[in-house]
Length: 386
Image (tube, one colour):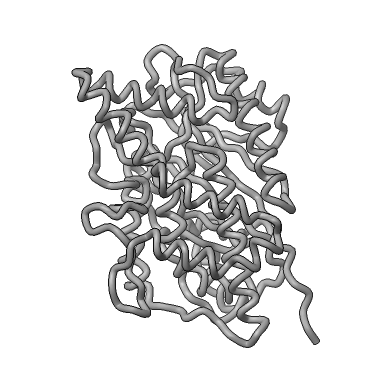
C-alpha cells in the first residue's frame, strides 16, 4: 500500500538585530515596550532570543512560497515599524558588522538563564542570528531517512545565504563567520545518521534521562527533526538580509526534500556520504560561499574534484525542477541565479565597506555604512538609509 505523500508545508523562522538608530550598534537594553508592542500585532509569531538585542519571528504553516513571502513581508514590516517607534532599527545579518559580544546581556527567563549557566563564556559569545526552515513531513521514520540524505545539500544551501563576513569590526575573510561561533556549543554541526525514528529517540532519551538536556530542542544540529512539530528543520543557513533570498532558500529546501522523497518512491535513494566529506564542503561554504574566486566551489563527491558553485546550482535546479513545478515555485528557486549574479549579503557588505574605504572613510564609519545598508535591505519597503 502506497503511503500518502507528505504535506511538505513550509515555515520560516528569522532572527534579527535590534540596533540603536543613532550609533547603529546593537541595542544592549532595548526599549521596554518593544516586544509587547510587537506581540500586540503578531502574537506568538514574535519572540525574544538569547540576547536582549535580538528578536525572532516565525511564519504560520505555509502551503506556498507566495504565502511564505507574504508572511515574512507582514512580520518584517511590523518589526521595522515598531522598532522605529522605539528609536531602533531592524537589521538582518548573521553577525553585526562591529558589535562586541562581551558587552551584551542575555534575555531573562529560566530557559536562557539555564543555558547561560551551563555554557558560560561559550554561549556569551553567541552574538549571531540564523534562519530556520521547517518542512512538514508527517511520518517519523521518513523524517529520519530524509535527514540522512539531505545532509549532502546543507553546504549548498549555506553558500546562498552567507551574511556574516564581519566580527567585532573586522573582516574575517570568511563569507560566514556565524558557524565558527556556533560550533563552539555542544550538539551542533551535521546530524547523526540513524536507521529509524526509534533509534533516534533512544539516543535522545539517553541524554534526557542522564539529565544532560531537557528535550530534543537542545540538539542544535544543522538539520534536525523538530521536537515540537512534525517537520524536518534546516538550520544551517545564515539569516538572509534580502527577503526574496529567504523565500528562495526555503523553496529550495522544500524542493530538495521532495526530490529525495520522489527517489524513495521509485525505490531509489541519494547516497549517504561520510560526514568528514560533507564537513569539508561545509567549511568551503563558510570560507568561499558561492563565489568562484580564490579557488572557491564545493567538492563534487562523484567526480572527486572541486566544481564551481554555479555549476552545482544548475545541477540542483535541474534535479528539483519537477518539484518546483509541483509547488508552483519555479521563479522562487531560480532566484538563486540572481543571488549568484549580484552576490550574497556577505559579498554586498564587503562591497559597501570597500567602496567607503576607497572614498577615504574611516574603517569605523565604513562599518556604519555597512549597517545602514543592511537596515535598508532588511525592510520589505525600501527606504533611504537612516
